[in-house]
Length: 283
Image 1 (cartoon, rainbow, N blue to C red):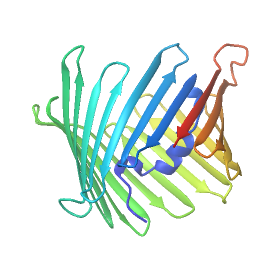
Image 2 (image 1 turned 180 degrees about the vertical axis):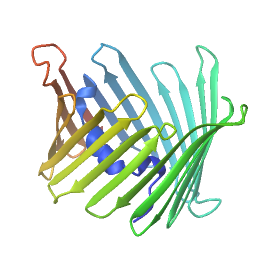
Image 3 (image 1 turned 30 degrees about the vertical axis):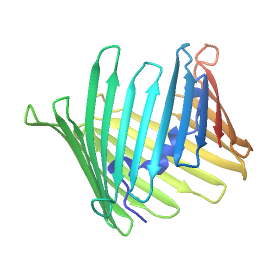
Image 4 (image 1 turned 90 degrees about the vertical axis):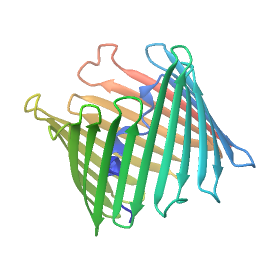
């Protein structure tokens, strides 16, 4: 089992708690297509519950023999983003990224350089913002026999100061994972647990405590049930009484429908509830 990146130590529980809950947008549409010359196109559109809409057009070209990937995107705020990735070309397990952004309306520009290095028992990353600061964020995870330990830190080159730091420990097994993370300069603590009960049922929970804001602990629990080979349902609830439901079904090959709802169980008589739908077309 490979060692995850620092941000993915609690990935299994985070995905269960956060992914595929379609109430977050009033409506969402995603269309994916691939061409014979290794170009993948993706178009996404979202409508929020506040009435705002957004969209993104993305084209990705992959040259597998060289490990080169070029991604170009353009969104509805007229921002142009370019990403160039080079994987395993310089050294085995090393990936380099160059990212550029441009906003014509304000002439704002961005330039970033990222490095990823992964071996059997190690996963390290470094993110450099070349125009802001410049700043650097680095993290690393070591693993052995399912046990994981990692740390991250941010550094402002201009100020010559560490701006933030975090740490995490975890354990990963084929059927379950557990982790404890201390973020925001070791002031926000999170404990996560995920369990694949069987081929149909998954369950997970996350508890969060901010040492600077008091003694109250935030809690979320979620479960996923696979109804059949082409559909599943999810449910979660937090300590504030907000419950979310989701249903995902593959209508036909390449066409997926997602439906979701969020209910505030403590304010059932108020207009705080949300409903959302998502369509994904993949060809």
